Length: 593
Ligand SMILES: C[S@@+](CC[C@H](N)C(=O)[O-])C[C@H]1O[C@@H](n2cnc3c(N)ncnc32)[C@H](O)[C@@H]1O
Image (cartoon, rainbow, N blue to C red; front, side, top):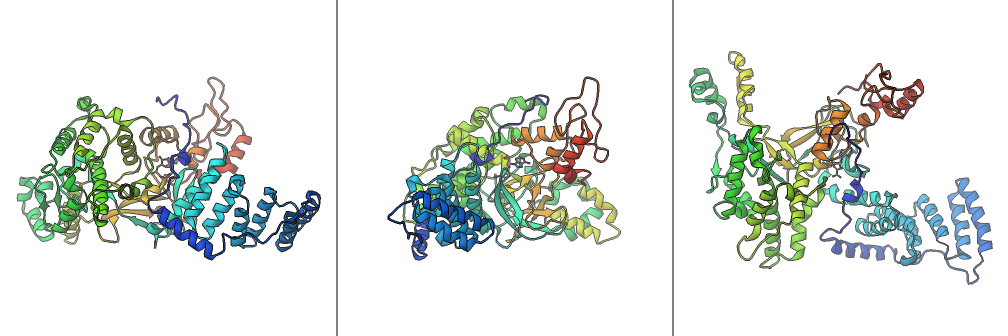
C-alpha cells in the first residue's frame, strides 16, 4: 500500500482474540460449580411471585424504587424493587434493576441469584453480562467466561463491551500466575491485551523481567556462538578478534586476565551448541530430538536454506523468493512445532499413552494461544517453499508420529512470531567482562572504545508472554533491554522511561518514534499490520495542508499555521486549536521522547 493512499484499516483486535475454552477448563468448571452450590448460588433469589400478578401495582413500586435510588437510599430501593417484582415477576427489566441495587449494596451472591432467576433461554444479553461480571468479582472466572460468551453472542456487532469484558476476565486468569510479584497486571483494552501498573514505578526501574518460551538465533548473528537452549554467549576471542589483533600484547594480556572461559557442548549435528550438558539435555528433550539434522534428514535442507539466506546481499534477495524474508530465523518456526510435539508426546507418556490424545495436543498448544496473530493474507502462499519444507520435516517423526502443517497453521504461526518476537541477547557476555576488566586498568582504558565497537552479540528472536502484551505508543513510557530472568538466564527487562503512576498502561516502542506521524503509521502498518492509535498519533497531524483537528483541507497553495510549541499539529482556526488542546494535544505537546 502506497504512503499516500494509506487508509485506516478495520480494527478487529477484540474479534481476533478467541473465546474458545482452554484445556482443563472442564475440570475448573466442575470445581466452580461445587463452590457455587456451597455458596447457594444455585438457589432461587429472595423474592417470591405473588399469585396475583398486577403490573399497575408493580409500576407504583417502581416509581418509589426510582425515588429511593435517586436519593441514594439503596436499602429502600431494594425493598421497592422486590415489591414491584412480586406482582410483575417475569419482567426482566425489573430483575436488571434488582441486580444493580444488589451490586451497589455489595451483595454479590444475591445479585447473581437474581441474574440466574431469569431462565437461560429468555435471559437478555445485559443479564448474561451482569452475571458474568458478578461471577468474575466472586472469583469464578471460568463460569464468568461462559456467561460473558453468551452475552457477546447476543450483542449486536457494534457492541463489543461484553467481548471486552470476556477478554479482561480471561487475561486476568491467564496472566495472574505470570505477573505474580510484578507491579503490573495484564488487562484488555480496545487495543487488545495491555499491561498496566498496579503500583507506582520510578523512572529507570525494571518494571518486570520476562522469560522467553521460544527463541532462535537470528541468521546474521550465527557467527557469534551462543547456547541454543539458554542463549548464554559462548564467544571466544577468535570469534571477535582477528589473529593479528590477538597477537598484540595489550590485548593478549587483557584476554588472559578478563575473558571468561565458557564451555561449549555441541550437538552431534554441529548445528546447535550448548553451554552445559544440562542445557544440551533440556534442548534435546524439549525440541531438538525432532529437528536434529542427524535424526531428521529433512532438517538439513532447512539449515542449507538458512546458510544461503544469511549470506545473501539485499541485491540478490529475489533468488530467495518463496523461501523467506522475515528478520527471525525459520528455525524459530521449526522449533515452535517441535516444542509442541515434544510436549504433547511427554504429556501422553506421563499419562501412560503411547501417542498423544487430543487433550495432550491442546495442552501442548495452549502456551502459544497467548500470542496474537495480526495480519492479512496466507503466508504459506508468500513462502510456499518454506511451507513445503516444514510440512516435510514434520510429516514423519518416527513411531507413527506426525504433525500436519496446513497453510492456515503455517500462516497463523508465522504471524504470531512476526507480531510478537523481541530481539534479545546475553547481557552478561564475555565481551562485557573484558570491557569491565579493561575499565579497571587506567593504562588500558584507551582500548575500551575500540573493543566496545566490536560486533560480538548473538541476537535471538524470542517470544515473551508478558512482554508480548505491551502495546506500542509513539510516546512510550517504557523500553525493553537485555537482562536476566529470575532463574539467572538471559531474558528481557522492561524498564520505566519516566515515573509511572499506579494504573497507567505500560507502552513499549516497536519502531523509531522520532519519525513523522505519517512515517510512523506507515512503518507500523507495514511491519505489524495495525494503524497506530496512540495519543501522539491521535493528536499530531501529517502536515500544513489539512487541519489536525477537523481534517478540513487548506485551499490550494495555502498552509494552516502550526502549533508553535511542538510544530507537529496544524489548525484551521483558534477554535480547532483550543478544542484539540482540551481533547488531548496537551498530553503530547512538546513531550520529551
Ligand atoms: C505485541 S501485540 C501487543 C498486545 C496485543 N494488544 C494483544 O492483545 O496481544 C501487538 C498488537 O497489539 C495491537 N496494538 C499495539 N499497539 C497498538 C497501537 N498503538 N494502536 C493500535 N493497535 C495496537 C495491534 O493489534 C498489534 O498487532
